[in-house]
Length: 500
Image 1 (tube, rainbow, N blue to C red):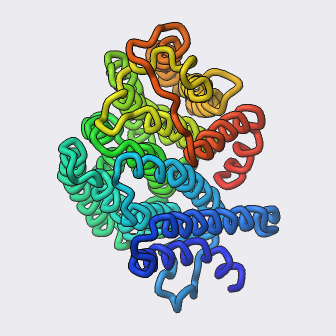
Image 2: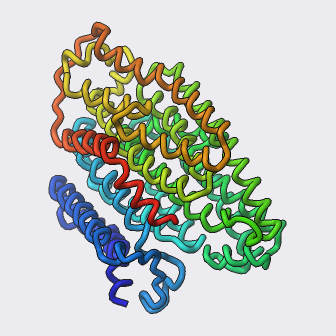
Image 3: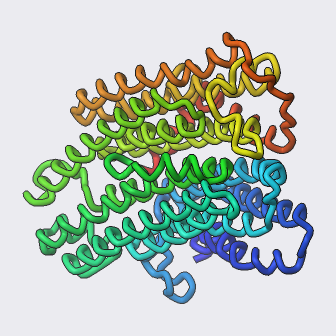
């Protein structure tokens, strides 16, 4: 019981913190610096608590998932899980949140939109992500996704006097509501087919063939369509470039990285439970076919997502839109882990999502620093000669671009390596070949930006950018990429221990 309560603390405290944030807003009134400081302290405290839990002897003794049988008097009995991979995911979300916060204060002040509501919305979205990671019930999973999504709907339109921001919010809201319908309908059909929304119960019924095959198959298909929209994978990716381009850059930073990775966490949780990888006679004929066909469909979607994202990014002249389309391609890379459907694939996804958060947040933070108040200085030509006017930003952006391409010794290289290796082990060599080709295509626009910064003359004189607290985010991102590139085995071995 004591261990259960200990591992429940991060989720419980994060929820309480989100609830009291609006009250703190009222108490501090016009003191914007105070609410920023409180939010940072709250996120850092939650991060330290999760790091402590990760170092807890419970992990080293081999204990995996904890089910809170009597937590809160049975209110969440068997609906959430604690410990194991959930701690790792919480750390990932909180790191992304902290990096976004440090960059947000300066960006919002520059745009004259430093409103306290931003920090409350960011906190609520992060709590939604944590509920996704801790879910053992399709209902808890759905509530987590919607709490995150509703916060993003509002944050996308945070610049309420700018047409582009309002347009991004409306598009995201309308298409997001449409995707929610798929999620709800899929969950209801799965419940009708199995009589439960708890993933471990559903999994056992699949293995014992105690469910309605037709309803379950349709339900799984609809559920994966809803998750594919949230993760912006082909063919449900069209909303992402428009929303990411129109939303405030700092919102795009958080939404396209931490928000996207939380969707893949949902993919991992659902696929582990419902698309089983148990070999041989242990599977019924139906569940064996379900696993095989689902993996093949997801593999095709992953291949198309990588190709469409990278090929479309080739023709973009706007850096923000280029990064938006490239984020679609990275969704395809991450989806390889789901198609592989093995411990190597799931652990590779964890590694890649960590690396992706560092390199994509770092790139978007630099975009937010260079961008002007009137949404100018967003074109590729505006980065010409950046190495002369802002050498540190040019070096940092080059590191992020090299890592996004997948060059050693950066984290992006090993992230792709582990995912490609998992596909080969799953007898999907063709998918690895397509992934390598997609990576080669991405060299053009990633390295092209580096060439602009170092080998082209400025068309308009670029001012010296004041880094402020955003410098902390950039340094954390660079350190994270280099650490994962130099010591990749530490994270991958930890992730493998959770998905054996």
